Structure formats: structure tokens, C-alpha cells
Amino acid sequence: MKKSNTTLTNSNKERASILGSKASVTVEAALTIPIFLFAILSLVYLLEMQSIRTSIRAAAQSAAKTAAEDVVTLPAVNIIKLKSDIVNNIGAERIERSILSGVSSGIRCGKTYMSILTGEIYVTVEYSVRLPFPKFSNLTAKFKETMKVKGWNGYTKREGNSEEDQVVYITDHALVYHENYQCTYLQLSVQFIPASQLSTIRNEDGGRYHKCEKCVHGDTMAGVYVTNTGGKYHNSLNCSGLKRTVHAVKKSEVSMLGGCSRCSK
Image (cartoon, rainbow, N blue to C red; front, side, top):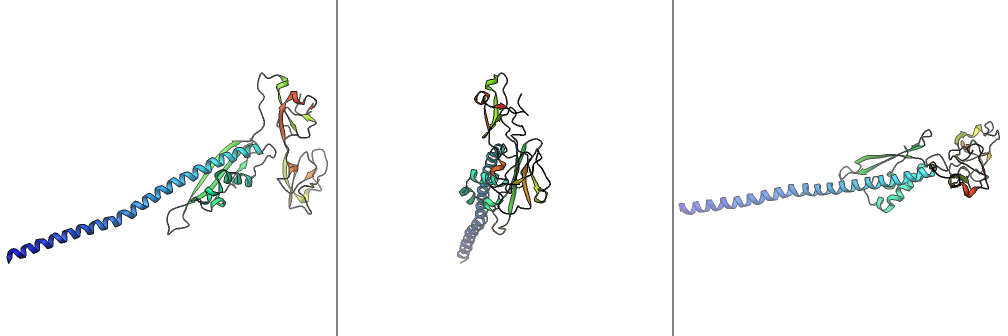
């Protein structure tokens, strides 16, 4: 009887040991699997975060180059167009399925500006991405991309070119050609003034400003846009009357035109 009791005791100990081992494995699995899954999720988020950052920066660089070309006709940065170009470069579908907070409306370019003194455009793109914490649905990480581009100001005259091969600049309805792309006849100096000053302000030739038939319908707004050499005031900065298309051509192609009195020899 003594031996039988000892055998039962050993058997119970073995059974308890096996059950304890299984319970230990179950506890370890219960702790390890969520940690492993969270690590995988975090890695996926990091890859997606880096992907959206790369996409936004590349799209912003492309949009900045376009903005640098646009200042040829209007010496200012169109923030709305800049953002639209960024969204189009990334792709609306790509943005919609990304972790970008606020999707396309979450891209902000309001701090972008152009230096009148240097002609350089300082582009700033701000945005946020959602973080993978379900209990904190509004938790985001903020990012900012900055870059600087030089506004396009025409072609540089190369040494050794003959006079006939010299590049000059003309407008669509040109009467003269210009040797200097920065000539004031080519570069419109757009300024914003209160509408109340229209009766007193004069242009470069001493003339008064009259309403633009293209963008002024009815009463003027609180302020209007004018140029030093123009004779019209405008309600819209995007009015075609404030834009001037400039073409770079060889001097030999416009030999029938005279040279500008301000910039041509």
C-alpha cells in the first residue's frame, strides 16, 4: 500500500508539471502574439509614413518648378494652384487611401512666399499623418517639407554667339524686341491697392485706371490690382489682363522690329 501511494503521488506531480508547462506556454503566447502583431503594424505604418513623405516631397518639388515658371507672367506665387499641382502629382486616389490626416485638405501651403528682392520662391508644405493607436483616433504626427527655387527669368546670353543668334524677348503683340528679360515693359509690377484710392492714384504715364472688362463686373471689391504701366484695375489676380506671355526668340527672327528704348542698344 505504501508503494501504491508513492506511485500515485509521483503521477500527480507529473500531471501537475505538464499542466503547469502548458499554462506557461499559453501565458507566453497571450503576451507575445499581441506584441508581435503590434510590431508588424508599427513597421507597416513606418513604411507607409516614409512613403507618403517621399511622395509629398517629390510632388512639392515638381509643383515648385512649375510655380517658378509661372512667375514669368505674374510675379507672385499662386498658393491654390501650388497645392492643386501637389495633389495632382501624388494622385487623388493615392492620397485617399493613405494615412494622411485630412487627406488632400490636410496638405497646407499657406506659408509659401516669393521674395521680390531675390526672385526666389520659398515653398513650405505642412501636413500630418495618423498614428496607429485606436484609443487615440486624433493622435497624429506633424511634418513639414521646405525647399527653395529660383523664379525663371529667361535665358542667359552665351558668350561667343553672333548678334544674329542673340536671344531677345517679345510679347504676343510686340512692336519692339527686348534684350533684357527684366525690362519693366515685360515685367508687370502688380500691386494691391484699396478701391477708395482709385480716384487719386495714377499710372506711370500719369493716366487714371479704368475697370477691366474681363474681371470687374458691377462694383469693385475692397481692393483691386493694378500695374505701374497699365490703365486698368482688376478684381482677380488671375485675370488674363494681368498676364503677359513672353517669347524668347533669335534676334534674326524679329529683324523687322525695333529695339526697346529702355533695354536695347
